[in-house]
Image (cartoon, one colour):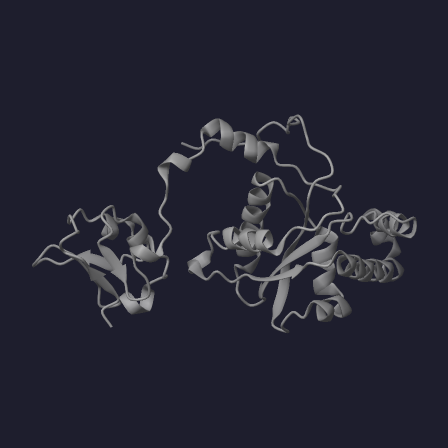
Length: 275
């Protein structure tokens, strides 16, 4: 297997692919001065595609994909710093949703964007569960409440310190503090033995959250929900997670009932400058 193929008619021999390869497994051939794979390429390639993505002439091809299979970056679609700042700082955790479901095509696009997140060694370990039916979201939320009731009985003082009795009281009064009436829940899960599953899934969910905001949807991290998935076997089984996986995050999703007009101030930056 050659691993990489270089179109010598397109290649300008600038060495950018060599400089950008995170594994340092592409080198310039000393004879013809074109890029080539090192002898240990197959052992250390992350399959990140940096070499194909960065090549300005489209000369680089990997055995498993080439430039024509990549989406072209359109420079005219780049956001201004002001637009990026408003999106990032104006994003809010939405806890009041319209009684309106999000089309599956939109949910699929959210997951597609989320899967562009960086991950350790490019493992892309995330798997997804999307609860589409609002009635099923409600049923699963009730299971979370059941798990909280058990936690209160088991350790009442600790539960009180965490405010869990208030969560149950709200549920009994008809208000859902688990999923906040969201029509959908998205769960990210991964191999529990992969040491970076937490970070990788968090990054993917963060991209999902931000993209949701950009297209007029609202999202909120469902902390009670995903913690219960791992701690309460009936909920774990109801979601159908593999036995060697854990949930590493869950997101409420839907159309916001209200729109925000201002960006509240945050705490002052806490930083130590070194050097």
